[in-house]
Length: 40
Image (cartoon, rainbow, N blue to C red; front, side):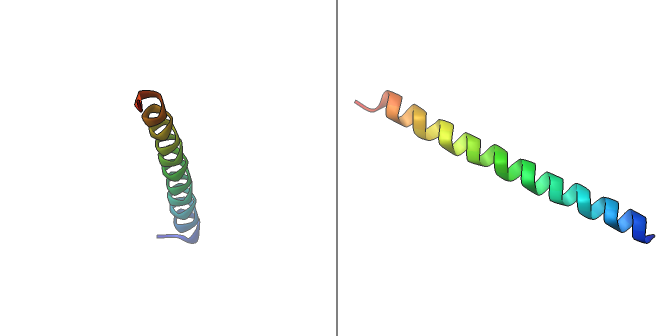
C-alpha cells in the first residue's frame, strides 16, 4: 500500500467515525425527546 492509499483509508475511517458518532448523537437526542412526549 502506498502512503497515498494509507492516507485515503485513514481519512475515510475518520469520516466514517465522525458521521457515525454524529448520527448516534442525533438518534439519542431524538429518543430522549420521544420519551418526554410519551411520558405521562
